[in-house]
Amino acid sequence: MAFPHRPDAPELPDFSMLKRLARDQLIYLLEQLPGKKDLFIEADLMSPLDRIANVSILKQHEVDKLYKVENKPALSSNEQLCFLVRPRIKNMRYIASLVNADKLAGRTRKYKVIFSPQKFYACEMVLEEEGIYGDVSCDEWAFSLLPLDVDLLSMELPEFFRDYFLEGDQRWINTVAQALHLLSTLYGPFPNCYGIGRCAKMAYELWRNLEEEEDGETKGRRPEIGHIFLLDRDVDFVTALCSQVVYEGLVDDTFRIKCGSVDFGPEVTSSDKSLKVLLNAEDKVFNEIRNEHFSNVFGFLSQKARNLQAQYDRRRGMDIKQMKNFVSQELKGLKQEHRLLNIGACESIMKKKTKQDFQELIKTEHALLEGFNIRESTSYIEEHIDRQVSPIESLRLMCLLSITENGLIPKDYRSLKTQYLQSYGPEHLLTFSNLRRAGLLTEQAPGDTLTAVESKVSKLVTDKAAGKITDAFSSLAKRSNFRAISKKLNLIPRVDGEYDLKVPRDMAYVFGGAYVPLSCRIIEQVLERRSWQGLDEVVRLLNCSDFAFTDMTKEDKASSESLRLILVVFLGGCTFSEISALRFLGREKGYRFIFLTTAVTNSARLMEAMSEVKA
Image 1 (tube, one colour):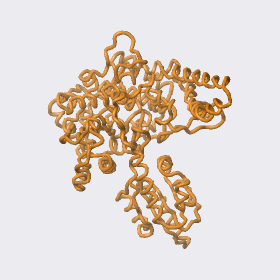
Image 2 (spheres, one colour):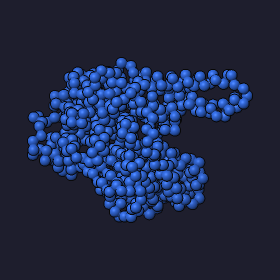
Image 3 (cartoon, rainbow, N blue to C red):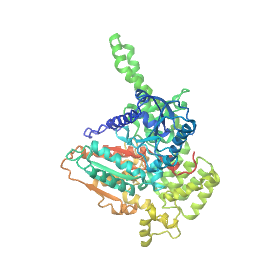
Image 4 (spheres, helix red, strand yellow):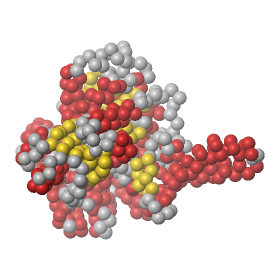
């Protein structure tokens, strides 16, 4: 049922060291304010901080009270205030208002600002503008790698996607380069590097510069990880826009997995309380079903429940000694599993999902991916908008239609946009402008074929500086060419008869056998060839001719085990479906994949990042 790892699968590195490093650095920074202090934490940092240093650790280092950074005035009476924040302008204004209020009241206290993962010049400028630069001390907590699971590291930077892919803001690329540098210092060097995408190339070059500056640190070391693959999210928007049907993806789409844990409400816990559950490989039941297509999960969970009952029933015929043994050893494990069978409570969610509408939705998505019945799919989307099912869902379907069809014909674009604005409100108008700029929802220009001149211009246009040439050209620049890529890479499997989801034959199982994730197929093809050779046409269709790179060093020091470990870096977020697909590929080919992402994402988060209407 669950996919076991092959007996010859390579061991994963131990990433708990990253947590220890982050914790020690934070403690060091807190101790620079000796004595009692109050700590103000930004909401975004609360969950990651909890995974690194919980409240009791903070208390041990003389943190007195904890406050959330919010717009209300702070009621702290402490003489020392410490702020743990992301480098954002609004946070600087908040800190300035506190410091200036103290000045007016004639109070003198000590203030320390700790920026995570790094401080930006703009923040220091604001502190100076507000006249408090001399009153606060600033530090960086370079915490940019949070191990969410044995094979998943997250930078917990969801804003990376919008900042880079919409605003063209490159400031986080340095953070990525620093994170890669830390990984190569601890687990490196990485003998083989591959990448695709403009951001991937910039991050790679910056990281290489850091390595050269500190030359010699990893020299002579045996690599632990043989390959690293960097990939931009905009190389494959399609996969991120699809509804997820592997179990972990479905839980994320339904409940939002936040920083590796999920809040199950009363409808799941069957009590009046909510329950926060950590979802990772340590949870045995969850680990067995996380990568499964959800149609297999029910049978598995009910079988589990029956097995548990049988083990409970065994105790009836036991004597005292056996009973003691049972209680001390097995019962603990059973209780644990019983609690974890709360996952079975997700059945309530599945019931919502497996109603007719979810089946219809999946059918429409599959039709879009395969390029069949486009008129019917368009009608389905119109109906979705008219019924006001959900503004985010309707947007997602429109984007999926646009990318798979290489842009909408002007008539459809205008009609869908008008219906959407009438249905959900004119305040969404700016969102359409954002989606167009990012190439997610575009309109085909009349006679839209790329001439040689236009394709030259479009290469220029992907550069933000030259991006003002005109909207018409910029929409040409971001042609998705999905159909042609899909044909070239065989993304839609030819299936004779039913696709057996219980015994998956390829990565397409993560979308019910209908579609192999493009990002995962690219990774598979490049690893097979150990280069981009033979993929020139695909790279051209992806508009990445200048941004596909390979860097191989001599492999004499790399063990055969390390060469089967692959670190995949997703810039702009990755989905649980892609993680499941690559775990499957690893089992098939004897690799192990490790994932590093700027944040775990899904279709709703992607759309919300582009939206100008805050939910």
